[in-house]
Image 1 (cartoon, rainbow over the protein chains, first blue to last red):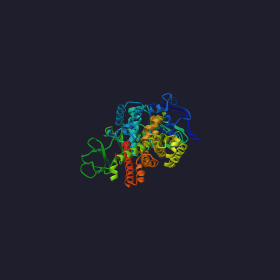
Image 2: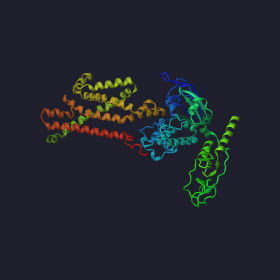
Image 3: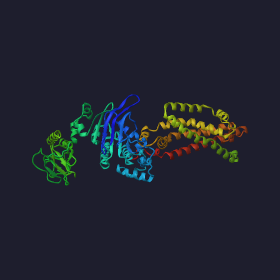
Length: 365
Length: 216
């Protein structure tokens, strides 16, 4: 656990970057520091591994005051992932990852073996081992950055806007990857970002900082969206927070309805020309929609109306359920099970009714 | 040409002597320039002092330096040490600025991440900053080496050995082939040394040879 007690950072020119911060970061969880530029989030992060020393107050890691530890020794025990990776351009990928083990005096063979393992862990092909950072894409470099931080298996990982320099698609996959890694490794991660969506997606808890280095709210992401502490947090969390907040509400009690379905190869249903029929393949996976009696005598996978987003019952939230309902051309959302097979239908009204039930249950608790 | 063929052993000796005068100062000057360049890169004031002093040193005429040094060092007027010291001073003057510039061009983010990995300053300098400054420093070393090779000939005017002797001797005894051969040889060894340094630089910096984004 990392604890800030009355921590203040005043720079020589008089600016206060962090103002009397009290905060406890839970062990084994991802804690995100988020806020506009100049809010002291990065300064707070960099004080944990003494890249910046506090002017006042105490920071402890696992109950030990960090000022009582030699700075270089402390840093070797804390993984650090920097913006744009900060890899050593003159070292191969393998040697980059082996940096901290070599500093700790491991023998070369052991350090390299560990590096090779980590390349696999973060999803880098073995043939990249001998390449130099300049030969990798931004996303790959960032993976190397994560592997390098994990090399000596530190309990704590500091990540300073690690995904800010990669394009949105790559960023999303890196975020997914981080969550997957974290579910296996259970590190204590402090993650800095200016992107509230990233904060809400990754954080078990989110600390929102306001300009001047004051902690505005420290809460679970769902609470941040449903109950911002003040106007600043409300404004920072941004538009659509009601909708995004649905992402943190369980859809476990959402009732599923039935839909008219037809399988590819079956005869086209006859009857009402305005009726929507969901088309499934032989694995019962949704392919699209058919309106009315369609064109041919039998149903084919071609010429279907594309479906909306799918709602996965096993991992679903009210947000994905509502989106499935809203994006479906027929107005009925399609629910699927973990195997991707059709499981039922959802209507927007049902989602809103479920929301009301969850809210009243929360209010009662 | 007949003069050259008749005097091959002499030419060989003079060439070796020339290199023995020209190259050790380059190595010594570089070794001194690294800590001084590091110092210059530390603070703005330090940089101003070191760089200006180095610039001043470089303006002292070489002939004057060859003459003054025996007085300063207490050496004999024809002691080879005078040439070595004088050329070391020139190399140093040339390279201090190069080293300081090369070090300041190392990306701050890389140094920062090295610190955050747990490097202490001296090891970080040797393992990260110095290797990354090789390409720029090496360009300076090539200039210094060529300039050192040409400056050795000035020493010959006051009686030191080296290929410059072929200029003075050829002039006194009126043998134009000897003068021309001397000039050509100085040029050739300057080019060869420069080429070897270029190759050395490539061997030391494999990461600069790779094609960027090869895997994109």
